[in-house]
Length: 109
Image (cartoon, rainbow, N blue to C red; front, top):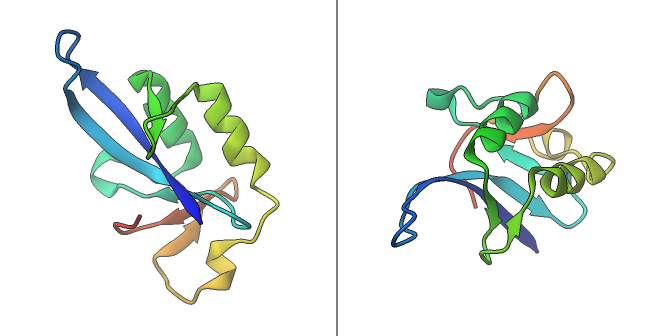
């Protein structure tokens, strides 16, 4: 069982339409948080994602529950001792950034 997380930006103040919704990654039971690497936006490391999310100002899970940046960081960092996706799968699209955070370089949910 897992939960996907999304960075939200460019929300219309009147109708609340979301112009940009990016998949940040997924938290699965027993596994490190797995970030979605997005090459065209240079979102390929934990630090890059944290900078992007702090600029967005909003992160939501797939159930539309909003998290603060600090809550999201706490979630991700609390899972750093869980199983490492990059060691469990042979798939070369999995990698660890310089700080040891898991990434998958393709679309997933």
